[in-house]
Length: 208
Image 1 (cartoon, helix red, strand yellow):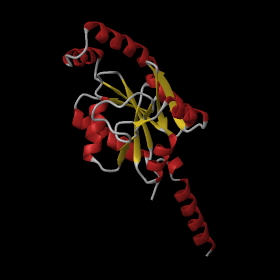
Image 2 (image 1 turned 180 degrees about the horizontal axis):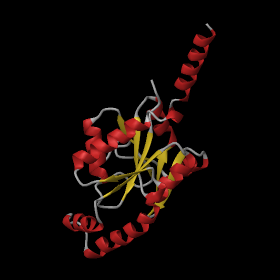
Image 3 (image 1 turned 135 degrees about the vertical axis):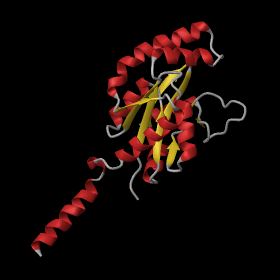
Image 4 (image 1 turned 180 degrees about the vertical axis):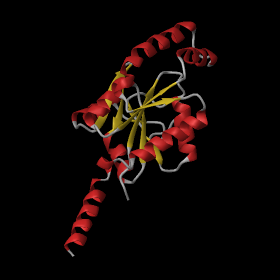
């Protein structure tokens, strides 16, 4: 069984990342969505190990001390992070692990795991991004303006990613992401053992 690929997915708020991830997991059974660990309290209906791994602040800080997190950050007095053990278990089981994360965290992952596949999701235009944010009907004009301002900052980091994924049609977007990940499995650097075996067999054949 070949090891899975760690796929880091980032994008603007309103780009539809969550919808793309949900549809990808519905269509294909070889993907696992990375579960974050957090110090915030569970909300009604949330379960430990499903939405998040819920831990105390002391437990989380021990994870930091033990280098047991691929990345972590603090938002509104709570920690959020990506547990290394969960991700590695899924990868060793042959699952492709999707890590949906903002740019700052993504760069930390890239630093620790250079072979991670980096994908940035965007709508076809900023005008469409603004339309989607407004269409949600859940954010105030101030929040929308803040998200658009943040998008301007995030756009500066797009070049750090391996692939650009334009989310215009959801099904097409999901299929493109699936093809990108499957292609990554065929990258030479991910098949070094197979290449060595073929080389050795070819040399043995030549000697005979």
